[in-house]
Length: 229
Image (cartoon, rainbow, N blue to C red):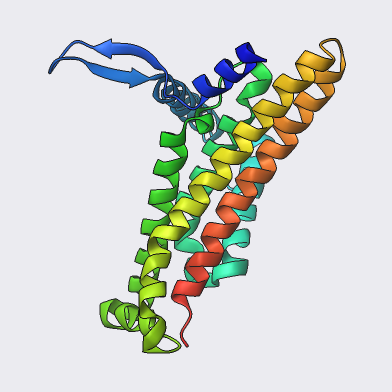
């Protein structure tokens, strides 16, 4: 158990893959290297999928357009038609988190197991949330929204700006780390076949569920900021 506890604590630390020998050495975390790999994979995949596009979609183009259409509709159902402009970013985030979360099946450490990665994603989401509010209401209306429904709770509304990214960050990080802990415990108790079944659940099903939850909560917070009282 001591070895297990030590392994668990090591998961909370950002692991360094290599150091760039400039400015005294710039450490590059493993999660960053894996993210670069995901980015390269997505760029190549995008190049392949958009090759030889036709007016009447067939084959891979049909699936691509169906996926893009579903993302646009999902965002529009929550934010309305004017919210479609946020679909490209939110779709990209969903694809990145989804791929990151299921990489455990391949024996690769998910980047989302790094607290710095989930914190970065949460900060970007809260920037988008506040930006959507400013774009919808204007700077003056956005500032007035902090005093709604009454000026007395303005400090609480301001505090939410910091609470929300923390909530998004820790929810995603906690679930990915929790799945790792459960899998390690199962491997200790039944190291034969059972871990394979649970791996499919935690690395695929639960990973995709967490992707949906992260994007869905971001959309709900955006909708709240964009609504007029």
